[in-house]
Length: 300
Image 1 (tube, helix red, strand yellow):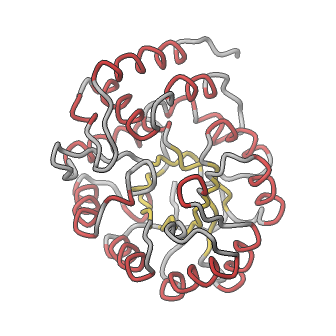
Image 2: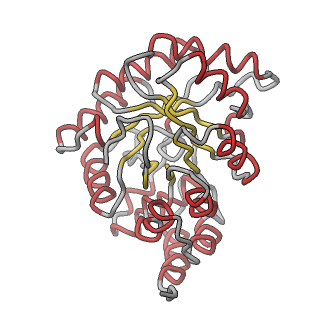
């Protein structure tokens, strides 16, 4: 599925995790192998350097190396790759965006800055405007609402102002608020955009109400249980208990631990500073709990 069009169904997007060495360098062979496995498992596209991909921890050079490695592995960037943009200054955000576009990525997922948090909608609009102005006519942008991480909201009102100011550039919104009320407001006010949910538990409901799919972390480990929800709005009763079982620990280290067990490759436990990794023992405990959930029968 192409990610180049503004309208249409987005489907199942993977917020891909980033494997790193003990020193914190991106493990490019493992990244390429995992990316292909996610696509082969049913994911329609991949978003690099989002929250799950520890995007706030990587500078321009490692981003460029990752893009090049995936292109060399035969993954078509315009059709299959988006890049997260997570930065405090507009200059750093612009540099991240330009690196992704130079690599041919088909879109950008842009989060608001997160250091100064007591800001209003006018201030958020002004910051995004500085980032979006040079991008007009060159790509598609998904606005990233994840207030639990940024402390700064991208409200439905700001979405409306930005799409009016930059017609054709704002393709959609990723709502990782975990609030169905916020998702419902986006669907009510901006249904013609691609409204994506980050909370897998709300995915099927959102798709039935006109949502376009998801960019999410669980697709790194169990894309098969998300295909029905993301593509057809079908509920899968395993999703909520899987999330409850998997994320008893911090989300990114826990997800990497489950990927490590999926491949039998404990190098996946490594995280980029400042995130602490989980131990192999904890990883195996988590994997046992998740495996039990996935073995639950699903009613026809």
